[in-house]
Image (cartoon, rainbow, N blue to C red; front, side, top):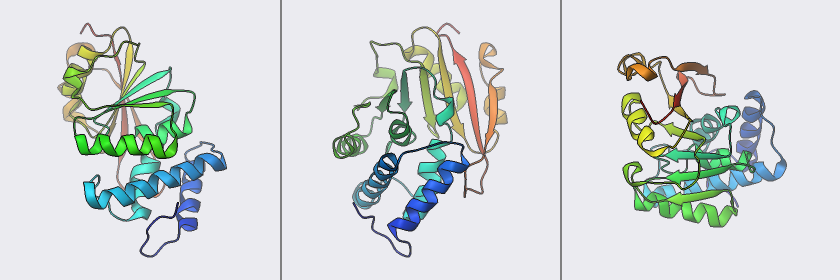
Length: 220
């Protein structure tokens, strides 16, 4: 599937993506690279009609969406991961492509965005994702969720409140943030006020990126 471009070719985009994945310390097959590029093509195509992202240029999407999402791949432990406020499938879809042995639940309340996600699942034949068109407050999972992911969805205090009401047993929250979220950390409930903070380096991205890890127990 070819990507609609202004100044760059699909081959150049693929090379940028492949180099970035290597810089992240990750490995990928040619088939997985093909699927990531197909996802990029779908994102570009549907973005014009569904306003999935404020980023319009494919080259910027490679860095800001694909590589940024994949920067937390090594932190995905366990079998089932819930991506809340998934939007266009970020970070869930890129992570699902590189982690076929794990299952990713993409949760979003926006009907247009979940329709896009259903199209992605069908077109890319991603059997390890499921899509839920719901608010997190109304979501229940029959299975044990091991990881909850969030990319620019809400503040940390709100996130732990919402997630603690959904998960059963121990679960880790991975919150992707830009600048170090000092005020959000200060306002966390006392039982969650010692999160692990990791500064992430995303190839080609100049802005700050941080990953906040919080162990949830549903009883705070």
